[in-house]
View 1: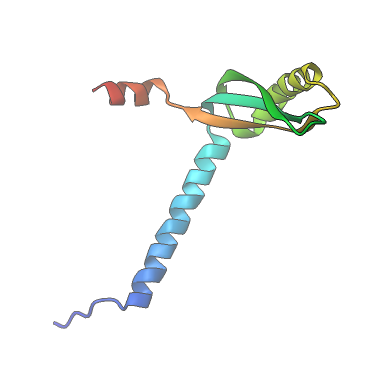
View 2 (view 1 turned 120 degrees about the horizontal axis):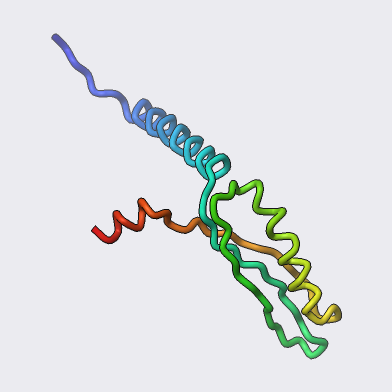
Length: 110
């Protein structure tokens, strides 16, 4: 019986395929699963003198899909933009971080 190890290019293509599958699975989990999120909404401002400052707020959203976060963010973003000086505001946005669920927290404690 004769066995030949796969060539380097074969190994790379196999790793690429596995990586593609892992990325697709991760993307599906992030987009389609309900998560607990820590959402930060912010507005960045700049005074006429060139001084920069940021106003922000955070909130938790539990059991929400990523694509459904936008409807929760919109009122918070509107509120923080209304609080900022409209002459200073130049950029706004939000970011979301997945928080650990109870099962993950129990695993950390063990």
